[in-house]
Image (cartoon, rainbow, N blue to C red):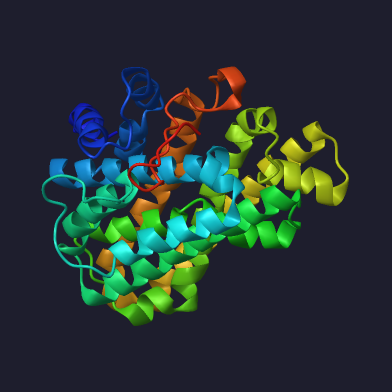
Length: 325
């Protein structure tokens, strides 16, 4: 756990209020109980104070976008969802900080993203910015894929779900932040090479499958099928208990695969061993930190009246159209 966890909690609370992405008092209290800043403190334990604040803000933003699409009005209309996602991606094409008041017509989550992107991109290389932008675009596209399935009542196949889950979970986006926290600048040939990609896929799958294991109750209560346990039960005709056991075994097997990929990656690039060891430690902090946070957070245990998160406000809608969700 980072020693800056408490500071990050206070910072995130002030940040979501400043950018109007969580506005009501009850909503902010409910948002705070999920512990997103402590999640960042567990998964980036070596981050300095400023970088941990930045990561905590990214976590808050990513979870809020996810909830808007999963549970909000915009996620029930694919055209609205795609317009919202396109609007967010356009933010990454512009330069400059988020200064002053929110521009007329700009959704709060787009305004907040401008601040995040300015603070992050200023620390990054052009190659990193291209990679991160590509991962965020894939994340938002996968969120629309999920929304389309939800609207049509489609349960995805197992292989398709596993591929898309790496993007709907924004885990590649979050793994990219390891570079920012650690001041790393590995060559693109290393990042794109199969040894690195194999370790990235394995560690990412451990994270998102663990998330699905712990969030199952919440998602079943909402009628959500985008969860590996439910997908496996549907595809393999298993009982819920059998699907839980299958998923737990798959997480263990994928962890072992990661350990093999780790050694192959270090052997493939001895000249970058120090930087890769730092990056791999980041992947491992993610796997373990996600497990510890998932066990502790109230996000997956609190039940909402009517099934909607109490902090869900229409912050993807243009200004002036922000009715209830």
